Every structure is written in C-alpha cells, then in structure tokens.
Image (tube, rainbow, N blue to C red):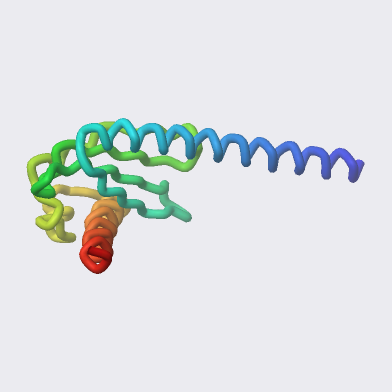
Length: 130
C-alpha cells in the first residue's frame, strides 16, 4: 500500500513539473510575440486566497501603452486576454488612484503597479550601467 502512495506522489510531482514547464514555455513564447510590437512591462500579483494575476503592457518609445494583456487564474491552463483599459496612457501616469478610478480590483491594481515599478527599476539599472 505504501508503495502505491509513493508511486502516486512521484507521478503527481512529475506531472506538476511537466505542466509547469509547459506553462513557462507558453509564457515565454507569448512575451517574444509581444516584443515584436514594442517593449513589454510585466507586472504580477501573487495570489494565495485570490487568483494570481499577470499583466503585460506593451509600450512604445515614449512609454505610451499601446497594448495590454492580462492572465488571471489558479491553474496552468489560464491564458492571456486583452486588457486595453490602459491603452493610450503612459506608464508613468499609472497610480493607485487611477486604478481605483478605472474600477480595477485589488489584484489587477497590484499587478499594474508592479509592471510600472519593475520598468522604472529596469530603467534605473540601465542608466547606471551606461
């Protein structure tokens, strides 16, 4: 009996590993496709009790958002959907107050602000290197 439990645990662990790799490959390919349009700011909000959220904001040379996509979910089968509510704004205009005025829920607001902060940190790092 114990052997079956151990075998089942190993099978489940291998399935989790394979599905995680599959999800990462899909995500990576999606980012590559978006980078053909412009630079991509990526924001995330982890979820323990709420579904996790990943926001992808494609920006032009002036940091104007030209395309947005969002992925919400708890499984590896979650997929990106259009998220164009921020299109036309610049990345630096984004704020908690703006997210509230656009009626974004908490997780989406956290992901959007994470994308802004990560991009600002990236810019600072680039300036320090150059």
